Length: 49
Image (cartoon, rainbow, N blue to C red):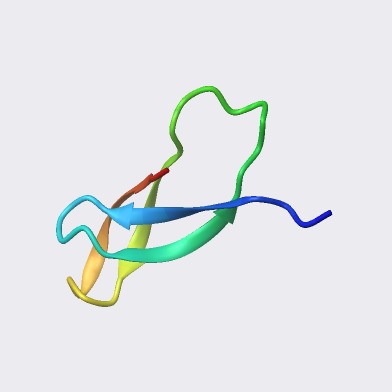
């Protein structure tokens, strides 16, 4: 069975740059500082549905 994935969206421009595995134990949305190639710097990326 394939694992389900969710996208991480940039909080500045809204582009969905990264995909991560969805974990059932995670109750809150994941928030990670990642590099956004569209903004050109490190921004906060949030898990989208």
